[in-house]
Structure formats: C-alpha cells, structure tokens
Length: 474
Image (cartoon, rainbow, N blue to C red; front, side, top):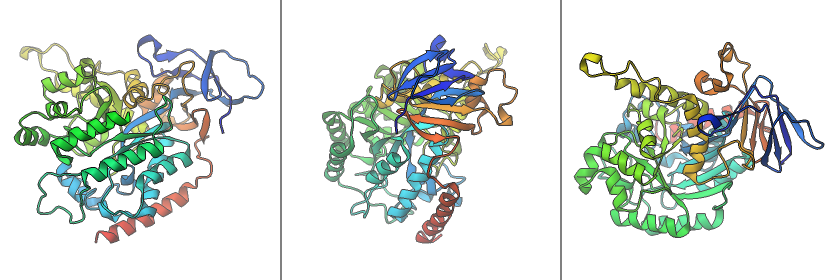
C-alpha cells in the first residue's frame, strides 16, 4: 500500500546526481502519493508515517540493468568455478538449460529478487534467455508475477537464440534453437501483455537476443532491431565480454563486434550492452558517439577472468553507464552493494594498471582518481534509469518516484567512518536495510520482507539444487 512518509533525521542523503548535486543536506525527506515532495527540516504532518533515519544514509534505490535470475540456483557449480567464459557456458548454463521446471524456475526467480531487494534494489532488468521450443511453462509470466509479489519493478529482456556458432563436440544435446518468426511473435505477445512505456513503469519488455554476432543471422538481427523500434521498446544483449569476440567476429563478418552491431541497427540511445570488456579505441568512440549504454558487471567479469571494462574511458567518450550483477552462476554475490563496491575498486585498479615509472614516461603513481564513490552511486541509480528509459527513477529529487533505500549503519564495519554517506559503497558488506520504498510502497521493513520466511526459502533452495543435479546426472 502506498503511504505518505517522512524520512527523518538522516545522517546523509545521496541523490544519484553528479557534482555538487550528489548530496542533499536534508536531513528530512517527505514522500506524498508515491513521489518525493520536499526536503529540509520538516515537521510531521497528519496521516504520514515516520521512518526514523538517525545513523542511516538515504540513497535512491539501486537499478540493476543486467541479470539472469534463473541462475540463482546455479551458484558455485564445481565444474564451472575455474573456467573462462566459453568453457563455463558449457559447464553451467548450457548444461542445466533444460533441467528447470516451472517450480524450480519460480524459486530461482524469487531467490534472486529477494537477494537484490535486501541490498536496496528496486528495479531489475532480467536478461531471460531460458527458452526452447515447446517448453512447458511461461518464464516471462513467472518473472513478472514474482517481481509483483515482492513489490519490485521488472524489465524483461526477452533473450534466446535463433542461430548459434558452430557447436563444439561437447555441446549439450538439449540446446534447441527457436525460429526467428516464433521469437519475434513472442516478443510482440509480451509487449501487448506487459509493456508499460511510462517513465516510472513497473513492467517493461526489451528485445534481447543473447549475443548479436552469434545468436541471430545478420538478416534476423536487422529484423529484430526494426521490430523493436516499431514496437517502441529498447534493445539489449551481451557484447565483447572476452577476446574471443575480437578473434571470431572479424573472421566471420569482416568487421569488429561494435561495427557489426552498428551495421545492423544495434547501436543508439535505446540500446545497451552487458560487459564491453574487450574493445578497440575506435569501438569506444563509436559507442560514445551513438550514446549506446553499458551494463557494467565487474564481479562476473572478474570471476570469469574476462578482465575489467574501461568504464571511465567509455563514459568520457559519451557511453551511458549503469551497473548489473549478471547471473548468480558467474557471480555468487548477486547484490548491488557488492557490485558497487567492486566497481569502485576495480575501476581504480584498471587505471592503476596503466601507471608507468617516470623513466618510462609515466606521470602518476596510480589510479585512485579514476572514479569516486559518488560516481558509482550515480551509475547504479541515475545511470541505470537513463539506460532503461525510466526517467522518473534513479534520483532523489522533488517530483521523482519515491524509490528510496534507507541503510542503517549499525555494523562494526561502518564504525569509525569519517564520511558515513559513502558507507554502503566503500564499506561493502550488507548494511541493515531500515526501509526500501518502491513508488512509495514499503517492500522491506527493518531488514525483513513481510511474509517471507528466509529459512524456509533456504530449505527449498537446497532441495531444488539436489533435484537439478540429479536431472543432469551430477
């Protein structure tokens, strides 16, 4: 239920904006009819509920722009722990692709959404590619149902493949492709049933084949882009996660991966890609010139040994930057606090790798100035909203939708901080979530999701993992 709220006495408020606007003095914030109505030193009004925010920091709720929720039951699969991307794809998502039934899929979606909500995330873009011809359940419907039940916003990125690179001898037998006409027809069905174009939509649909150079033919890729723009929806996919893209795409198509996407209508302000780790300088320039977006997934890229996307360079070129946690099968910590902390550290490490001694022409010791904690907050809030086209979200400003996270800093890891405002990003961990509001509805209260039994959820997860392993003969 939407209420009117007074968040009172916050130690700090970060807005998701840039520069001097990144912080608001507060210390109070009023929410009326699901919108932010006022800041300052405010007196309680009749009919509003008070959230005491002493020793708390207030952020815009996180926006996760790339996930694979079904993988929430595929964490730490032994055969995929020490694999690079290609071998990991075979060992984990492709191996378990056909092992999910409706019950296990719904459970996985719930687990992933709960993990995100408890980190202060209100909006989830799920790149859902678990499709095969004749499958017995509607995964898209389940994802929307689970998100609605928990009070979260869901952007369904309708994945899948109608074409694939030549299979390896060890490719799973059950990896069955869809036909292009059926894929596009299902996207149209989903748009008609669920898509809301509003700037504060709770449900969106996106055209999202798994990888442009590999999962559709060139003609199919162009048709998918044209269909998406006719329907008024955005486009999303994976791109340039590893060096294999730079080896294989020029060999197959005679151009770089980004140039290939440009050739087939897959760049622009309505497009964003996950990863973009391995790029050539002219590719960065082209992505920036077209205002294409990135879902930066630092933990997954590190876990798979893929590298570190040069997000600072991409943003400087004009690329729209957001953060995604990717799937739990390649990132066992799929929460936005962990992801922001990793982004903050790894962008500095990336810059530091470029430092050279002065005798070799170097000019600086390291890369600590590459990105600030406020930058990371902006990427994970306002940046996500811009990439998804949800312009009423992502910032704490008067008139914006009240998607708000109130983090309580009562864990020893936050004691002694000289600037508590930055605690969730620079301190990591998982701060006690005093409140998560989504459009003015309280979906997390004092670190609990009403009606959710975490112990029971964990027990069901353990049973489901055993069932999945039996189905694939593990």
